Image (cartoon, rainbow, N blue to C red; front, side):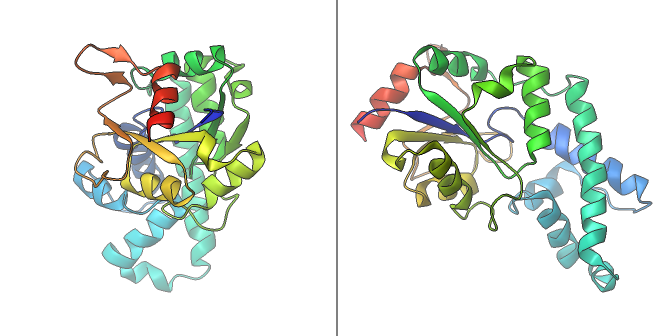
Length: 242
């Protein structure tokens, strides 16, 4: 079987964006809206079970601040908070406070050298993706990716397979010729439901999740015990052997 493309999740996979990125930005937005909400590290770990920033705010309201559910134009208000949050998150990226995870740049370069397409399949916004890539890999990095599936382009977010079906359709490739790289159980469910074999690189918030359906589980894209970066040939062998 030919490996034609590798599809990457973003948050927690390309970079550890959650604890010291998105969480901080949410709290800054809440402060700007004069809300006394404070998402600490442990609470954010619970909220991460919900994919999508606007969906996460709604889940928080339903379970921790139900009095706000009666607010007029609730969806619009949540969208406003999320927009402000995105601005704070982008500022963190532009200040280069969120680097790529170990081994990511090496693998991307390896795939490009081997003429294997790379794509993005994420629930975060396109602006978040493009800014992360620009400030970690350079201004031309966005062009490295054949397809970028991001944000609200599909109706259902992970663990639904919609985003992966969309990316596969844009690539014009069957799932059998692709590998996904994710960091969470929701991401694994999304990719495997689309028929894509999936590698997991665990993050701080996901280490205890169920990854039994993954073809490989790593702590990062630097493989132990020899500290060997994940490379194109390893992925090709994984696809053929599974």
